[in-house]
Picture 1: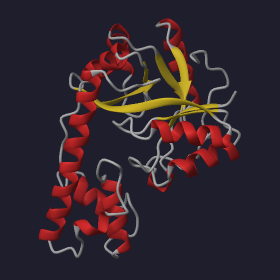
Picture 2: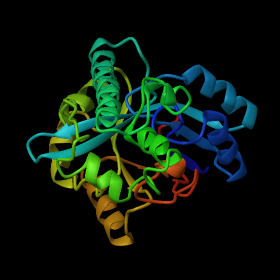
Picture 3: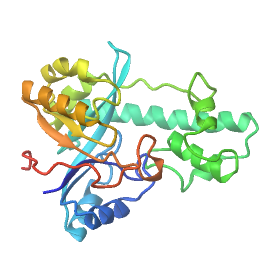
Length: 269
């Protein structure tokens, strides 16, 4: 088995459509995939059809954008076998997507006020299912000639370091996200724990219902992975892995579907 359990699509902040993602999975020998788009369960039935078309096993997933307010760090929680119909989880992701879309509109309006020749009409095709992300704004700006790449000087100046387009979202806490996933019947997994330096929070996450942890992902080193595996054994956590694929919107890596995977996955049900 070659399982990639952390993959995104164009429904959030990946440049590739679900069909392109499933085609890549098939071509790269992936036998099990979980689409874990940010803060949405949109597309599950479409994914099931595509999985059957390309002969790939599929697990409905989600990546909750959460925050460790105690340590002032982002902390992302994957949910495998996610399903709608659980109020705490549904309300949580609805709040995040609403804020994200509102921020996106405000960011475009701010750019217009600053004299940039763009409009909301430019985002009819370049957007996610619930609105547009910073990556989509940058893609339009690149097409208009205002920037040469997504994560370059323009991005850092405008979206980071207290720039005019830096806008915050009141994300759920990492504890609440883990609990909501577990209570809904999903399997909560700590995503890419060294990206945001989240290992210090592992004990409290386990106490809140965490069941797994990613040990293989694009930016992890061999030494870090070995440490994660030791902690997984200590806390009786399942090991997971994923490419965290975002297509050409990938900031930290040039991964592809199946670039990071786990051979044995014990949570099939």
